[in-house]
Length: 397
Image (cartoon, rainbow, N blue to C red):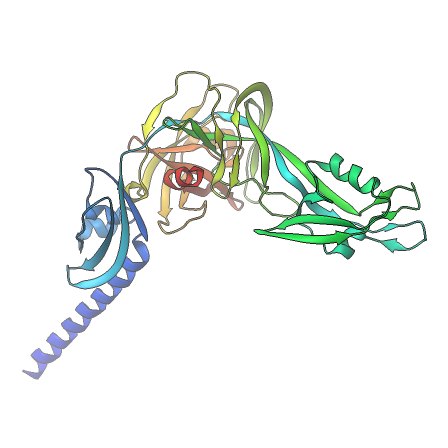
């Protein structure tokens, strides 16, 4: 009898441990917010991010009704695991991109990329910008009420200041700050200077991800455009997307990411109105050819396994290449929702894997557009990160 009790106690302990492990795993794995298309409610889909558990046993259940619901997910319909917000909406259809595009972006105000001291007319070394409290990464939007739109406007205001203290409005992160700066006359030229180094625009190439056929909005890159000197995201005043073609491809190797060098054309495809962590967004003016329309997968429908990426890496048409999705992070709200690996030998021979310029290349799985390439792993250029299409669509709205 004691032996039997001991065996039963052991079995109960194993069962309790399994229940505890599954509830902890479920709490971590299940998304905080879950999107579904009408008529496709299937709680088993909660485990699309990890098919191994879904294929073993469908253990979760929940009850709710209406278009926006909170599901209390339970293990074996008994043990509480997590409350999940479920949003049910119409299936979204997107015109898939894949074209290489030229990007020209003008910042809102001017971005401070550095400061320097200079010798003023009394022989002292000074830096008025630093003395005023202006820092690298700040954005100067106005001086003495004059809107600063570019570096030329900044220079004109400073040189015409006559050395009087100026009221400077800057943006530092989400905050707007008022500072006071007194330009000094340089010994070398006799002109008034501030000691500021600034940037007011950027140019580059990337890949168009999709256009929304309902709103005529476009999304590209899958990640924001950051300043290389300050690592801060650039604030957009205006920008445009142009046609582009591949001029050369630098193949990537471990420790040395590759790069697509492109020629930016004259034809304008659209505007840029937003620059966010999830990509750049704007309005579509024109796109060459007949667009291919794909249904968009909700985050819950994306799963590990085979997929394809659509990109332009030769001076010709965009093409599909095979990839594998090896990991999914459903709760990530960044541009690193999936880990992907290039498996297509043709693409590997051309690029060595993911290269700069492929950012924004749309990913297709099971006939759905699910996301876009965003980053390459420096030490393993065959692999990198991708963002969910649903997260890009939410960011543009």
